[in-house]
Image (tube, rainbow, N blue to C red; front, side, top):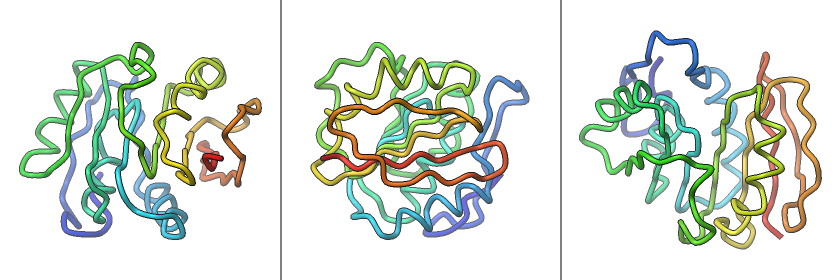
Length: 174
């Protein structure tokens, strides 16, 4: 696993051998950032960050500030060395316990929860995450195929794109 583009291009990233962490594949990350090119850059938040690969890709491509949230100690043991010598903020917290006012408005929020709990977490978390988005900001919710996500007030579905077993659901803050 490596950073695809930007100032950290080619940087190898640590990933735990434990299969509970499922890093977003290089190909899917490359596709994600191609999609995000049409959205404004700015603050970027990576929730359920795993190895931090998406957050590091964002930082490498000029998003700022960039923060990632992860609670798993094995994942954090990878994120911290992966983020060394970058401006990435690593928050060792449980996403589900973050308050509504945890973050200033973000241009992009990427969330990649465990696939088996993705639909339930969407219902629980989407209203709070919406409050963290800047007006016109984009939320990307990665889920396993075929996960359907219920409508949430203030989040307008834009599109869904499938990459192997992963689906990126994009929502615009309205």
